[in-house]
Length: 175
Image 1 (cartoon, helix red, strand yellow):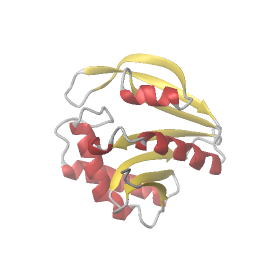
Image 2 (cartoon, one colour):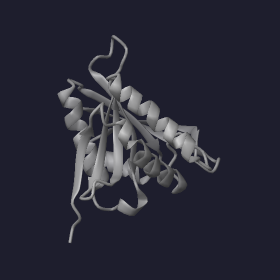
Image 3 (cartoon, helix red, strand yellow):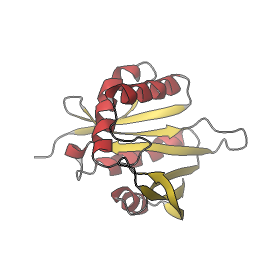
């Protein structure tokens, strides 16, 4: 039996209410080795503070926040679209923090989140999307399957949560 998963955009008024659940997903992903801007150990306070800043950005209209929830409303995954761009880039947006809780992986949730972020970007009149990910990661293969174009790789771009260097691959997609 396939569990129901709903992907939806979180409104400005409810983003703050999602902070604790989003912190759970972030901590789980970082503890699982995701290089998404945080080092181990990732404290709950730091994760909550990050998501509060995201919620503030949603409230200011600088970013969109999407979540994937199970039938009980538990957040299983998330992705953001940063839409506040310089004046000369009104057509562009950055995709950020595509995260799926480890217990919910291999169910097509990441693929659904990426399709939903494309739709959300179109509604915002964005025609060029940009993202980056760890070179050789499962996410890199996901983006390629979703029609993203590889731009290039930067060695030693970031650190894994445990401290070793990792290369980052940059992608773009025209909508």
